[in-house]
Amino acid sequence: MKIRIRPITVDDTALIIKWRNNPSVMSNFIYQKELTEEEHIHWLNTKVFNGDTKQFIIEEIETEEKIGSVYIRDIDTNHRKGEFGIFIGEDTARGKGYGSMATHELLRYAFEVLNLNRVFLRVFADNPSAIACYKKAGFTEDGIAREDVWINNIPRDIVFMSILKSNWREDNKYD
Image 1 (spheres, rainbow, N blue to C red):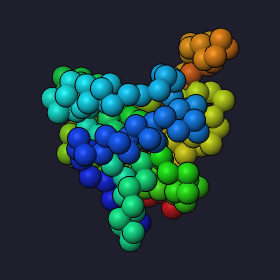
Image 2 (cartoon, rainbow, N blue to C red):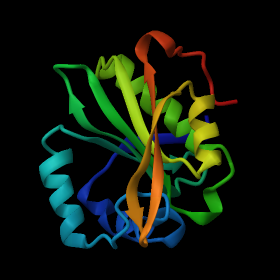
Image 3 (cartoon, one colour):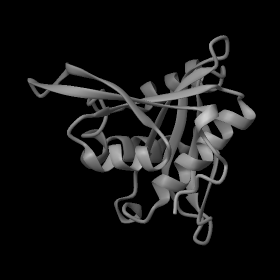
Image 4 (tube, rainbow, N blue to C red):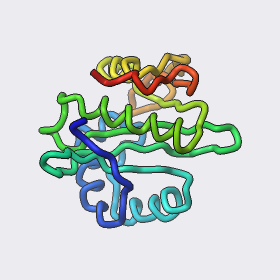
């Protein structure tokens, strides 16, 4: 394992804002407005610190460099589900498999620690590399919401994907 994930803290705010506002990261988010410090602190206080979201910082073990974030949001313990999200914020860290490793670690956390049954995600239909990465991690396509969001006055399709605890295996590695 070349990465580890650790819980996010307020001290990570400047990095999250830098990463989230990077055009190459922002272009893959449904919410494409610049994130402010106030908005991020509000997110931490109303979502992360109350347990609705479990968010982590992805770090390279060897260099201890912080490279991105992975999270499960809108955790519903009654129905045992939550929504997955990830971004690699450092341009130099992309394409090295870190996203796959972090996805594996977060799914292990979701199924073994949080005891969730279903983890789902939303991804732009025109992002085949992300869809392929999610499929490699064990996610399956649930359906497409046609022209679900409008980005820069252009309708975009959203692919819904999920993975069930019964379909996830600890040995379903990211290799």
